[in-house]
Image (cartoon, helix red, strand yellow):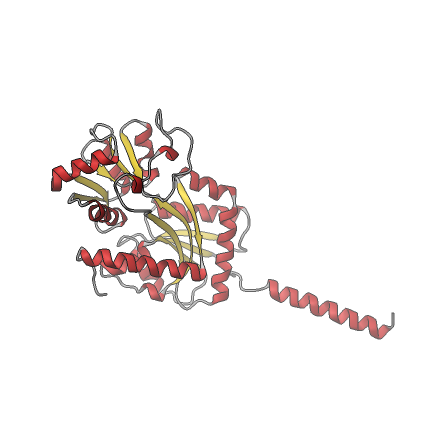
Length: 334
C-alpha cells in the first residue's frame, strides 16, 4: 500500500468516524430536565411522571438528571399556563391527560393547546361502571332500569365537575336515555369512599381507584367501557378478576370504548429534533419491565402514540367532545 493510498484511507476513516459522531450527536439535554406534573403530589399524573423519571434514571436513558415538580392548579391548567411562558425550552416536559386539550373547550384558561407541542401518549386509564355492594343492582341492566325509574334521584359521583367522569356520565345519559344527578368530588378517591359507604348509587372510577374497596367487598363492578376485556386474570374479589368484568357495550350502554390517555407535552417553539429525542426516550421507557408492571398495577392499557398518529387522535377527540359539550352548554370561547 502506497503512502498516498494510506493517507487517503486514513482520511476516509476519519471522515466516516466524524460523520458517525455527528449523527450520534443529534440534540441531547445539556442541563437537568424538569418533568412538570399537571396534578398534585400522589395523583395519577404525578405517579405517571415519577415512574417515567425512575425508569429513565435507572437505565441512563438521558445524560442529565431529572426533577419532578407539581403544577396542578385549575384542574391541571396551571402547568400549561406555565408552558406558555417557556417557549423554546427543550428541558421541560409537561405530563397530563386528554384534559390538556379538553379544558380549553369548557373553561377559561390562560393557554391555547395549539401553542404546545404534543410529544406522546403512553398509556390509557380505563373506566368501569361501579355500584355499592349494598345496592340491589347485580347487573348493568338492573342499574339502568333503576336509574330510569329514579330519574334525577339516581346519584352518580365522580372527580370534579366537567372532568372525565362527568363527561362519561353525560355520555351514558345520552346513549341510555337517562337523567341522573352527577355529584362532583375533589378526586376519584373521594368518590370511591362515598360509593363504598353507600352514599352514591354509582360511579365510573378507574379500576385502580376502586380496587381496594372491591377487594374489601364494599363495591361491585358491573361493566367496563372498553372494546375488549381487561387483561388481569388474578382474582380480585372472591369470584371475579378484572378480565371477568363484562363489556358495557354488550350490556345496554352503547359506548364502544372510553378511556383517558396519559399524555406528554413540550412548550411551543421547540425543534423537531428536540421533540424526536424525547419520543425516542419515552419509547424506550415503554419497553422496560418496570413500565409494564406499573401499567398492570393500575390496570391501565398500553397506548403509545406520537407524530401524525397522535395529531390525528387529538383532532378526532376534540371533534367528538365538541359535539357533547355543545349539547350540554359547556363550550366557552377563550
